Image (cartoon, rainbow, N blue to C red; front, side):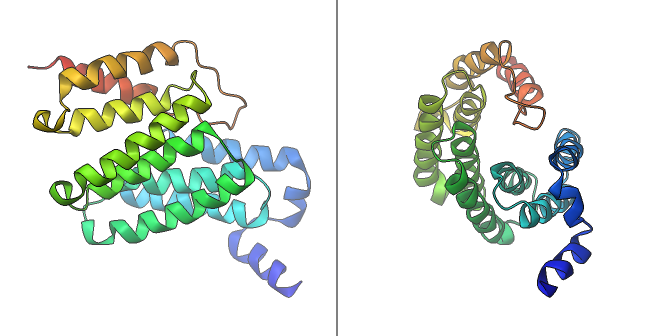
Length: 214
């Protein structure tokens, strides 16, 4: 019991607030809204820590673990210190495994698994591209199978193709059709709830612009 109260004191989250589902929802809505505007590696790591604090209190909800992992995975793409990437992504993988145990066969979770694999490529693209590119593609494919209406795995697959050299089967011309499919799915996509994953629309728009550049 002392440990529980210590955790509450450290995180700034009251046990009473999480006894009320509306308070949990409000806390998550505020944090999720920040994922739309946070872009720096440090900011994303800090936001991940915030989601982890929520997860430490609300242990049966998959979304706090999911967002904590998502923020870390996102930070990998803007993290300048590549020596620390694997440690960050190991943490993201651990968090995502908890989310997976709470919500198995979830398209959104498999999409972030693909993100984590893509993040590992950044450590050494020449040495890791083929291995983790294949892993990311497999996770994206599984995410599509689990929910064909989800635009995010198509975004991830298109992103992977965009950054894969043409000599290895990638490039803008290969990425563009996949990104166009993602865009078409975003037009009809509706999040399952106010705190359900909804990210990616701005990113796919920017990538399609890049695909059209000579």
